[in-house]
Amino acid sequence: MADVLLGLGSNIPPKSKNLKNAIKLLSKHCMIEAVSNIYSSLSLLKDNQEDYFNIVVMVKTDFSPLALLKFLKNIEISLGRIDTGRWNSRIIDIDILDYNNQIIDMKELAVPHLEMHKRSFVLYPLRDIMPDYKHPLFKKDIITMINELDDDLNITILGRLHWQ
Image 1 (cartoon, rainbow, N blue to C red):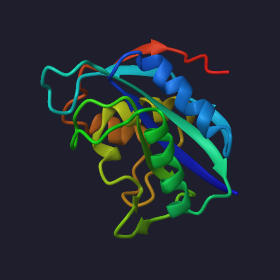
Image 2 (image 1 turned 180 degrees about the vertical axis):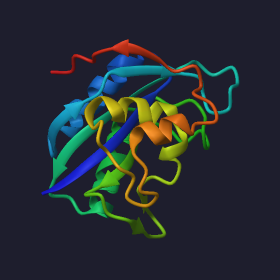
Image 3 (image 1 turned 45 degrees about the vertical axis):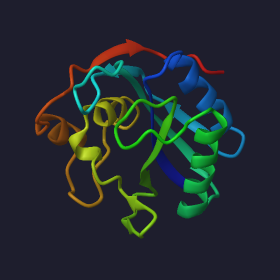
Image 4 (image 1 turned 180 degrees about the horizontal axis):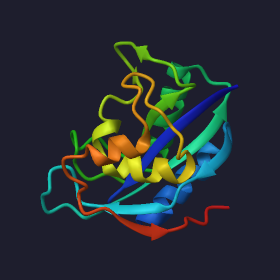
C-alpha cells in the first residue's frame, strides 16, 4: 500500500462540511491515517473570493497514482465541483501532494505537487501530521519551506475537523 498525502480545500460554504464529505468519500477506498487541523487563508489571487479552508490528509491506498487521481476527480464531481478555472472558488479541491515520497512526472500528474513548497495552506497542515516531512525533490524540511514562504496568505488555524 502506498502512503499518500492529499491537500483538500474549499471556499464555498459550507466549507467544513465539504471537507468532511470529501474525507468520508475518501475513506470508502483509502485508509485515513491522519487529518490535520483546518486552516483558513486568503485565496492565492488575494481577490474578493471567500477565504479557503484547507486540510492535509494522510492515507494508505492500493490505487496507482493515476487511478488515485481519477478517484479524487470523481469525488470532486460527486460533491458538486464544476470547473470555474484555475484558482477560482470551488466546493472542493483535492490534490495529491506526495505519493510514497516518489517523484512522478507525467503529462496528467506531477508529484510532489509542483507548488506545495510555496503554499502556506499546504505546509502548515502538513506540519501538523508529518512534522518530519522532507520534500523528495528539493530535500527541504517543513520548517525550512515555511520559513522560505513569500506570503503566508494570512493563514489562521481554526481547529480540528470532526469527520467521523
